[in-house]
Length: 451
Image (cartoon, rainbow, N blue to C red; front, side, top):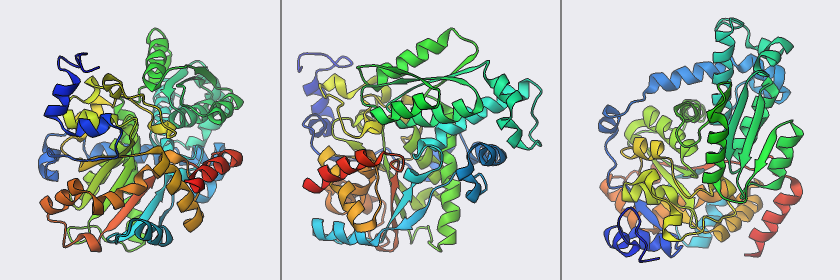
């Protein structure tokens, strides 16, 4: 492999220039501090998106609240707003401290996007939002809908007939396909989900039960996306949801920050320079964590610090951001297999859009093994009675890394955070799990408990 050129250089030359690649290739758990992070004001001055865009997305989701209540009864208690709980996990904090023989600074909390209504994952934010925006645009153009209307009419037969003339298409490792398939089918769209080999069988079965066409591939995420994109290319009535490049998807995720701000205020948890917020986001191609992190930076500025978490076999964002090559480089270029139990994170090539946009905002990335995700899955179930899918545990190792690794200790020093970190909040973003079938979750748990 060392003789094969990667963007004109050998693997050894890449490793010499960027030593982190040595760890990535050895499949070692590792941390990368972003040396190109800027102050919020400087990063924002170069950014093509703003809070106005995020607030526009938030208002659109609010307009659809009446539709959600009509189409998905489980959303009625929240008045049609798709949101997830925020809670402290003190027992898990104690367990991590005992196991790692450290003191975790501040309060350990979890954001349970694993329990979002409709599709039980963070993808219920961006994926559902993009389909809603597509439906709204079509209904506006048809003259059948105005912003001032009661959007519950979108669940009625005339709109289902309208949307049945159109198709939605996406490539996915699982959760994005699940959210887009469920919402598109309920609106009446013809929908096709192109699934990679990593996707769990139960997710495919659930989609098919909703009338979704599922195309299966023996290869990974990139091929599923490519097939989906090609299938939509020559059909003017087909909308392709582009997980790698979609600004709409990204903005749907970013609305989470506005909601989190309210939740923190309700729980009287301050976020400022004296009370920093550290957020750990599981990362696949980057759209979900990138959108959430971007929203958080808009809301909290320099008081929030966002880290992406990836499997050791699929740390494409760390590779792309560390080298500055973003989507031009993949883990497969270095002979890494991109095989992981964390199906939503099984991505070998990161989004160039997210990597480029988030470069001045991001604090860093870290990687962790599948075994560690399994182990923490069982530990969280034992200590807090919370059951998540393995990929959702990727964020749980971040607070440990913040304390134990030289790269992140250096980050705390550079950002002058050492005096304030013990007064801060460590927030783990749990990205999926509440819809995992019981028998599958029991298998995950047994595996984790045995390690």
